[in-house]
Image (cartoon, rainbow, N blue to C red; front, side, top):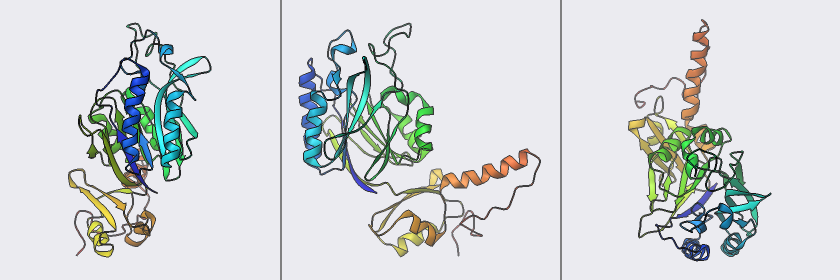
Length: 325
């Protein structure tokens, strides 16, 4: 469940030719690959950025075109996954795609942007001819389940919620711009990692409580972080003693990040022998999602004029708002 995740930013360095944009970003990819990552994410449609064209057909490629082939060679050599966003020609249409290459350099899957932005004032043409995708696909990699959203998808909360319902652990967001606060909001609401890769300057790694843990800038264009997809966000209610107990029992083996303003803490095992399941079993605590759901169950019955049923939660009779004596 552990993975080293790398992401890059194009840092506003654009060229008038597809080939020059490809060459520049492949150089950033080479730098990222030197960090020995398990996955590298590249920016949205990076080859066509600032290339003068009247139609997306002018800059789109086949799925096995020169950009995917160049990235595939590097995925194979680096034995890592690469998310390579490019405009693709398929079935007589053009799509704003993110192609996932596996560790052998083969295509594992493709996500097509669900929400291309209008490029006409009457909303009849989108991104100079891009066809909208139809589904928020998920992809199972050897270290966990991921999802992808692209740029303007950030304005549509429903697709981010769909990914949460499909139990993704990381959402990758290739984009033309930084994205700002909404990425932190989605990470917080759905408790999954979000990793952006942008054409501008601030590619970010955001944790499942919505905190930015790493980001690029105009000068540092590649960042990398080790992530355990076996993590958990818990509510402090009934659990005030849990972080201390885990740190005492497993010193240095579990990263505990406390966000008291939110009444949340995040647990991320660092030791290969530890799992969230084991920690839950030993220390008796549940996810924030389950804590909220227990309340919903009671509310539904109350609204029906019924008495709430007894629920046996993992925390038992621990103090709700204080540490155990």
